[in-house]
Image (tube, rainbow over all chains, first blue to last red; front, side, top):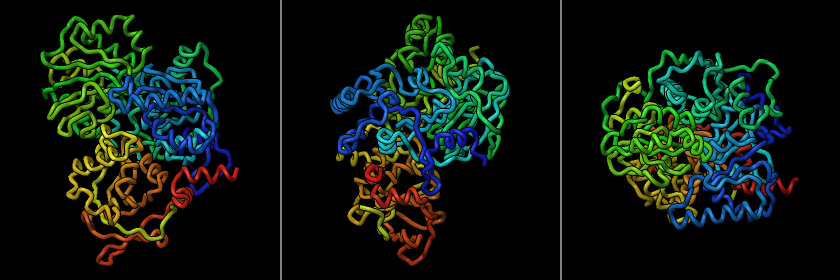
Length: 415
Length: 171
């Protein structure tokens, strides 16, 4: 009891085998970013087994895109050879961040079980599926068997009431929730969102599901509704064969409510995503770099609001603004709408779709003592560069306002 | 390989909410074992640990608080522990991916409350897996929570890859 829609999805995929509290579960789709695939290639070769279904795997070269060291170049080379030799149907080379590609692609929808070899696989739960991250070895098991072992989690229901005011984004709701529950408040739980009035756009839902893992959650999931259907129809040209209706009445261990109209823009202070305050409380803190990008904050709506804020203005002298569209598709659409031009004219640097600065992988790494305001998901000490650097997390709206002023700024001051 | 009945080692004490980015900074991601090991030493420094592997010969046992191993799923953080001679990780609670990564690579993740504040870096510790308790050098005992049968099976095989080999043979 109390396992929510997630529990129902697990039961519907169970193959009858059970060990302890774990059920053997059929997996519908697997997401494999470059670095995680590189880690399992040796074991995979030694096992001498084929991938269970070549059509149900997306490999994305997104972390080392393009590679910035010789070792990474060699890892990507091995990954691409594997894709070719195995005949994996779906592979993205520099097409964007794997979590965004998974949402954009035609593959996943409500009721599915989706695994990824990256913690932010929770993002895809915005489409009404059970999407969760695992380590490389767990994914190796799935690649060969088409199965995984899952425990039905306790589920928490989050009711979202009303629409987002123009100064708030899904990111602010995510930070608000993390501030309430702390870094382990959702430990191993399913966090299931109900958008009671159907007013939260898909890009904001993806950001919300992305960040539930920062509270320890197994997965985030939006109960499928007209927004989900509209997104999937826009993506595939039809609503597809997904499971749109679920039997029974999902039960929850707890209920939380968020009323966006009563929230202020939120900010996570260094060095924890759950150390959250109103942006107003940190107002005036000098910032050296603003990063708008990542699988949390580099989507179309993120670039749209950032470009609207920046258009015709200049970023503060000396401040570095880095913008990374989360996918090539977003990049192209933003170009067509003039957003990229507005960002560049304001003094922003646009990087190619990839993970980049978020994990301190390449480009935009922070120096000693530098302060960065980022639309990404983690501000752990040293993640983006020097261990003495400091990262603040906020929405793209807050990021754009901060870039213009050169100090932490509540976006309402510029609206 | 397999699950040892008794594990002994030196304590490496950690706090609450230790994330994998600080334990093993992302810039040390590599398939090269020596670079991965270097990342663990860097992690130890960032975590304020006052030893740099002088106890590794005796084997290390991490003793941590809540939500051990939160954040990134990068398995290099656990591979680093394997290379660094960590024989078990004891914590009040675990982040779920880290918990699975430990078991998958053959390091027992053990839940035990109340022990973290009773130990310091370098203390000798003895874990009886079978009888489910931890004994300190001064003979004090702390109970550990039973392992789930599935996790125990993986550990008995020495990790998820050998477990998978066994399952494939059964099929």
